[in-house]
Image 1 (cartoon, rainbow, N blue to C red):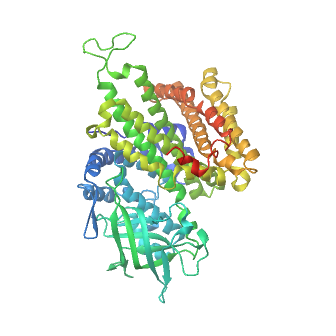
Image 2: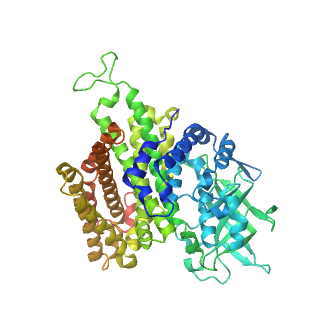
Image 3: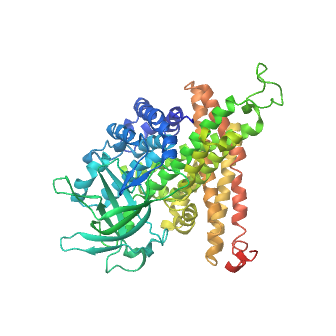
Length: 597
């Protein structure tokens, strides 16, 4: 049975030594002192480790079942959901006007990492509700907010997002779900949606579906999409539940992973719905929550890497196999633990370096969202918009890769259900697909985000890197050589890739788009390189001041050196691939792909 230990020490290090949250001018951050964040993280960690993690294998093994139109969740999920809900964990960063606690999104993200690592499928139920809450909070009428949000904040009512249909996924302009206006101002929603996470279940007394549909006079394409609230049970004016709406779960998807979450086919048969925001502006409402949702998926990716790494490390410390080539380490045992072997160390260091860098990157992204929302910082909003596809795409690609590395550490044991690593691999795989596939993330990054606002965000990113290097250079030769010089070289590779797109993308867009995936990874490596430089600098400062756990801080610096030496040089490889252009990618005709058949 796998285990999970909340990484609260590392979270505290990132929050206070790297991001220095309590010194930030973001409203609400002044309350985030070490004692407060420690109390929140320690209590959340107990829930994650003691309540959610033991149910992870249960949910995977049992899955969800559909009985007479009702989805039954795995054994123990209801009691755990009640405990999470009653503890106020679903309301951390929600608006106090609707029963929320009003904490920064950053704290919600840290708690979300622990819950996702412990039981990703379970945490999706409240995660989807939070996404629906965000959309209604941003675009709903005052009456809609008062009617739906208090019970969504408490998770007495669940929430979903209904986008995909059987014939279309990313190209939402092709949706066929219809919304027919009624005399009373409501709409009749008819159509089918698929892959709806938490679309039907028995843990909440009501589920508030947000459904994309088209009005009869809708323009073609995405400009004709509207957003509707479609409750499972209609809500009376006094807030009580009324009649069952004309919607149903038509089936459960048989999936590779996240078996504990109900992924539903949802049928709307003239269901009563209510317009959110303006007609034909549904995509704008939906994209309100996309930065947070995609950051949340990036978080899921590295969270699965974290729990997989922990279990791989535990195995490597105990598993006896062979002897250390430099000399026996455990003479009283028949063999040395496998962690003595260089290749196992490489494997574990790769996992550790990624997970800790990804955590810092994601927490930084969450702080940018807070700066945008809490103080109206337009530069922060532009920066997180630029970084969102990198957080989602790079961290989920590498998060999945990390679970595979962890599985490999266990050898044959990693391939068996008993040890749990194969579940982490399967669960992590979906993060590369939903909330927009990683290919789409890379196209969004190169095709839209780089040029937004005249390229102000990417230029601000480069200026930030240059300023960091200038401000920290010259005081420590080892730090310069091991952190700043590699970061500078990687940043130059990123700039060269951007220049290639500018020079070659206009005359042949395929030159840019065929290199977009490499660019996303190149950008991700630079971001983690920046995070590792900042973490190493903070660790050096803490050591010099005699603050903190010296073993932890020394390990932090050594892990950072590993990333800078062994992973950051990949930026040169990605640049070389980008500069080959589209010739080899587009060389075959569609027919030639099947020519060997």
